[in-house]
Length: 65
Image (cartoon, rainbow, N blue to C red; front, side, top):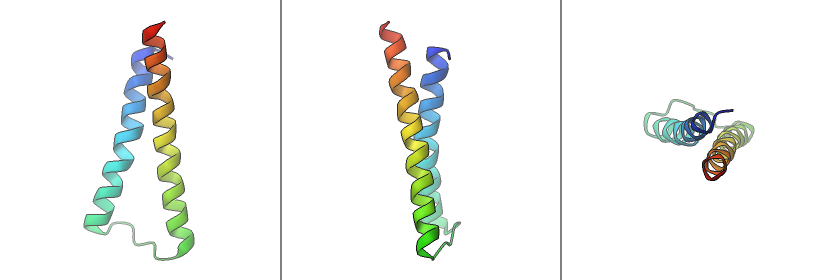
């Protein structure tokens, strides 16, 4: 993948879940009140953020090389 594409995708995958989580708390969009729903939301959030962080690190690594 292109180094700039990796950086852009990484930033998108880190920023978008954080914004969605903030809006879902303020507007009450996702009303999962079961423990399984809370676990699923948290797992998906951290998975997307970690993939975004990986893309950012790969993009920075490509910039140096």
